[in-house]
Image (cartoon, rainbow, N blue to C red; front, side, top):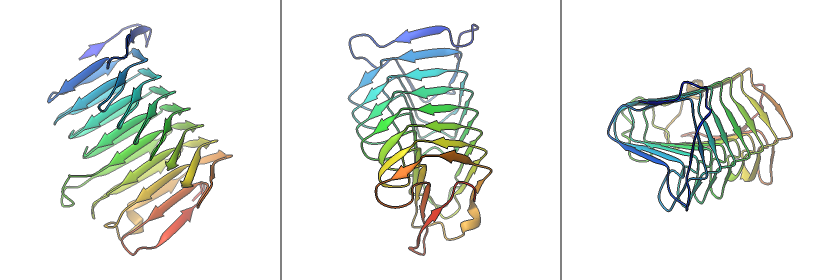
Length: 239
């Protein structure tokens, strides 16, 4: 556990182009810290957490992190669960995905009351990337975005967020979020979902979301989704 009792006024800066913090195989709680200007040629410009564990990111600020792979500001891989609450992710960049934050093969991802602004990924998930690359489809997977703010994030696919490789039992909830000015060069200005396993659309729920000025140069300026049927659908923010 690493915490600062002064509400995110303790600042760690990645001088000379270094990753600020890296954790492996432990339960991690980070609270009240600000991370700035971290850099890595691996995953997680500011902070990387890998291996099993139950992690919490509380009232933190991540700024200007850069990764030449995934997770410009934050990278989490192989966790049992991660909770992100009341945190800020801004001005991150990633050559692959998840410039704000990337969650790979993490069974439960819950993000609430957090702010993603001006993050830029070359490939996917400007604000957030959630991907189940190696996790078995038989293991239940759950992702929830509740009362978050996404503004001016951009990527080739999924400007605000991207979820992919969802298993047959995956569940997604996007509720009461605000999406404003997010951009995808291809599909899904506000967000995108790519899955060849989820056949039941009831497992994917959008409700109470609002926004404006999201755009995609290809398809679906708001949400884009593909399911096991092969159908590609556009979903409005209010649906």
